[in-house]
Amino acid sequence: MIKLKFFSFVFFFTILVSSLLSLYLGSSGSIAFDEWKWENVIFQIRMYRTLTVIFTSETLAIIGLILQTIFSNPLVDSSILGISSGSSLGAVIGLLLVSRMGYSAIFIFSFIFSLLAFIVILFLSKITGYKTISMVLSGVIISTLFNSFLYLLFMTNTILTRVHSVSWMFGTFEFSNSSSFYASFISFLIVFVFLYVKGPRLRQLLYGDDFAIARGADPKNLRREVLIVTSISISLISVYEGPIGFIGLIVPHIARMMLGGDISVASLGSLFISPVILLLSDVVARVLLAPSEIPIGIITSLIGAPFFLMLLVKSYRGE
Image (tube, rainbow, N blue to C red; front, side, top):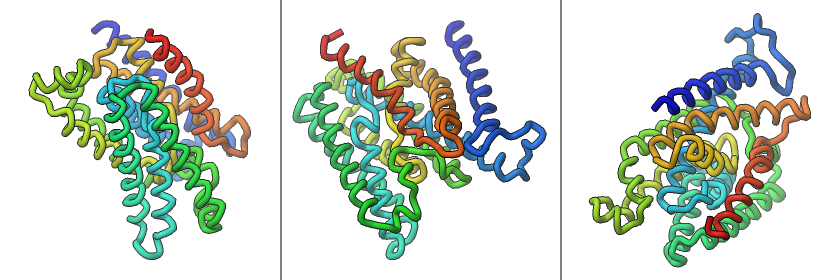
C-alpha cells in the first residue's frame, strides 16, 4: 500500500508536469503563461488536445489490460489484434456515406468494422486454442488487410484528402477539439465502469476458463461483453484520432512490473502511467519538426515495436 501511494503521488505529479508542458509547447511555438486564458484560441485548442490525450491514453491502456486478461496473452492490444485498423477503415467508409446517411454513419461503420475485426480474432483464437503466436499472426494479417483497404480508399477518393489529413491514418491528435474531448471522455467512462464492475470476473479468467466457470463466471458471455465495450470505445477514439498503437501493450506491462500482476492494481497503475507516455509523445510529435507535426502513431510505434519484439522473444522462449 505504501508503494502504491508513493507511485500514485510520483506519477500524479508527472502527469501534471506533462500536461503543463503540453499546454506550453506546440507546433506553433510556446505560449507565455500570462496568455493562458480561455479567450486565447490557441490555449483553448491545446487544452482540449491535452485532455483528449489524457483520456485517450487511459482508455487504450485499460482496453489493453482487459484484452490481455481475457486472452491470457501478454502480447495483445487493440492495435496488434487489428481492432484499431478495422475501426479506422469503418470510419473512412462512413465518411464517404455521410451525404446519404448523415454523420452518424462515421461512428456506426467504425463500430461495425472494429466489431468485425474482434469477431474474426475470437474465431481464429478459439480454433488455435488461444496460442500466443497464432493470435499475433492473425492480428497482423487482419491489420494489414484493413490498412490496405484504407490506403486504397485514400488514393481513389479526393474527398478524403480534403477532409482527413493523411497523418490521421497513422494516428494523430492534430484534429483535437471539444468533440474529440467528449468522445475520449465517454470512451474512458465506458471502459472504466466496465472494469470496475467486471474486474473480479476478469481476474478469474487469468486462471483459465475452467476455474472461472467453477467460480460462477461465464467466460463466453464475458468475452462478448468485452467485444462490445472495446469496439464502442475504440470507435469513439478512432473517428477523431485514427489508429494509435502500442499504448495498450506497453502500459499494462510497465504497471505490472512496478506494482504487481493483480488486475486491480495494474489498472490503477495504467491510469497513472499512460497519460505521461502519450502526453510526452504528443509534445515530441508537435515540436520535433515544427511547424509540421509528426503523427503520434509513428512515435508510439517507434517506442512500442522494440518493446513488442522483446516480449515476443520472451514468449517464444517460454520465459
